[in-house]
Picture 1 (tube, rainbow, N blue to C red):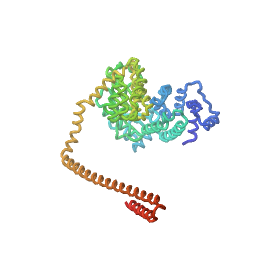
Picture 2 (picture 1 turned 30 degrees about the horizontal axis):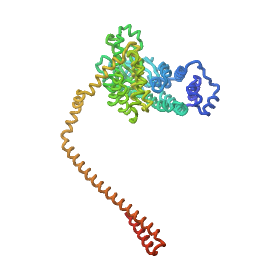
Picture 3 (picture 1 turned 180 degrees about the vertical axis):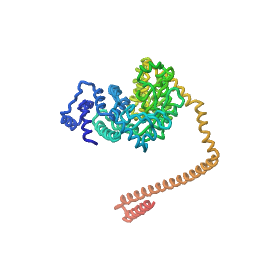
Picture 4 (picture 1 turned 180 degrees about the horizontal axis):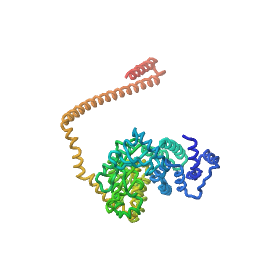
Length: 538
């Protein structure tokens, strides 16, 4: 860990007054003394609100901290509303690195001169971000236009140092923050570290893009550019170049005659299709990663890029989530509470009655608004916040889902402010549940398993014979164990009886001592000793 980097980070935090985020009454004496000793680093932004100060500090510290802030902006179950809202303004705009360095990195990855595979390589980057930048070229054999995504030189080392610093600060915050246990800063940094370093592996991104493209092959709603896996490496991604309108450029979309209402609805449909049909969803669908095709503006098509972060859901999670959404649509809070307990998202000893009351208290005022004005994503955030009060563990797959849903809803309402996400989503979810739980689902399950059952059918007599033999052997062993336990029990009873008899003889001898002939107590004592020895032998 660089001492100079540590000093710069601390100086930035203190210059932006981030120490004020923790009330001084919660500071240990040595922390207060440390802050007083740094008197030459004052808060230079006293007039600005805390959320803005935090955003400015993260921006000044560079890409790793900016991406951390972007991640925190999606964790509305942990962050106060003002901070989460302000952090959504973070812009990941980074100056590009030298094109010659990009060329050298590509050639190292491919193991030869760039001209062996590409022509018209442009050293001037098309786009630049915190972890990688993009250059254009053509495939030499087909003249197809492609983009080459290249990891920044030395970024892994910078990221490791900054994440190590974050872990140190998180450990301190967990101890001194009044809400440290609930906010789990160390766990948040650990989650961020995994996400961040996953983005360094462009082979992972290539595989994600290929999977997503296959899922939407022939779709008129989403297009994913083709990836060229033979040319992809851990630090290099080669994919088809696309031309589209940035989804945030509403004026250009209008000028192209795009049906914005249909575009917004398609965004919702694409999201729910990824989640519930495919169990594989693009989890970084911010406006910078989404474009709209110029063609067919009346029935517009999305173009999705940058598949470095994806989410998956287990079959059980999908069903519980869909049932939760439908129960919310119907304002059936009892069902929502029962589903959370049944799914294991909250402890099984949670009082369903108390949980139902808590959910109703939070959500019922929201439903007093017209449905078109209700934020679907915010309802989900409120639900998770309520569940956390009942010791709901952080579910990584649900956090990614929540983040993506907030992106999708915000984007949809930016395109078409009257978007009623509830109206768009409810029929989709109800149809999906019917499809998963009705007679058709049972027939589909039988049909999909027929090859397996057909393969195992000839083995059935042998399996049946083996199971019967195992059952017989088990019964014999069980009978032997029972006999053994019975013998042990009888021995214990005999041993206990002999001990009682030995003690009785000894007490009787002691009582009679001095009252009768001395040989009587002596005989009783000998009998007691003999009985005790017999008990020990057993």
